[in-house]
Image 1 (cartoon, rainbow, N blue to C red):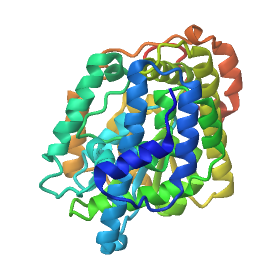
Image 2 (cartoon, rainbow, N blue to C red):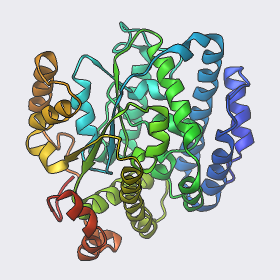
Image 3 (cartoon, rainbow, N blue to C red):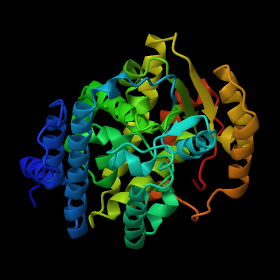
Length: 387
């Protein structure tokens, strides 16, 4: 099956009645993605519908966002001040920490439903009751029926915080599609691409979303950011960066399990060898990219958080994070976070188990490969277990 970029562009324009996608920055990534998905992903019949469908959704939202920004130029004056950005690493607790940040009423998380269906921007009254939430919930429920394991390994809610890649993918520079399918050519292109345009688009979407009146300090998250801190901080120079760390032996096994679970939904082929090689390298590149950024920008504050610390004492961890940025965790925020911790035990959707051997990975080799990273951040070792 050949996925044609121009056909998808035409379909998005036909559905919306709109023509202008804004910057042409999305086109190269779209074309590489379509070719890679056609030639390399070994999509199942479901995947052959789902991947073009996801691309179509990105193009439709981009058209609507661009149109809204043209019709309401005052959106460009919206200010985004000192957003919290939870950087990663992969599978190191970014979702848990982002849900804690969301409990602070002063914060404004990027919600799953609005990331992919951004126009019109929500009002404060409609933020938790917008009809688009029900549409997103129905889509997620259908995917849960097809593959219930997805809910176990990635327990997002339709009206809860989501990863920034859900917006970055609308410039076709994010890890969304690599999680859905195995795309070596697209992955190589993505690694070399300039991500500045994706973060500029991301900033425009956040401005649009808050322009309806649902404002606050943005709380954002994605392990993707670790790979592109220069582009992120160019868009958000005052960002409050929080970097999560976890035993890389566990991270490698857990991310391989996650990607296998997701991609098996859309392909019947066995991609485990590629997943093990590619996503382990992705983690290694993330570590190297963060270190290079820190060396080049010692003036940028990054608060380091150990996964073990977050899980064992989340409230003390959050107090420390707040204090690092000159704030105090108290009052409504502390009460809401405490209630969330007590009512959301780990593994409520089931346990995510993993096995390095399933991917041909050796724990000792992984430990040696990441020895410098573990020593630099004094990361507690877990070895095998559940994530």
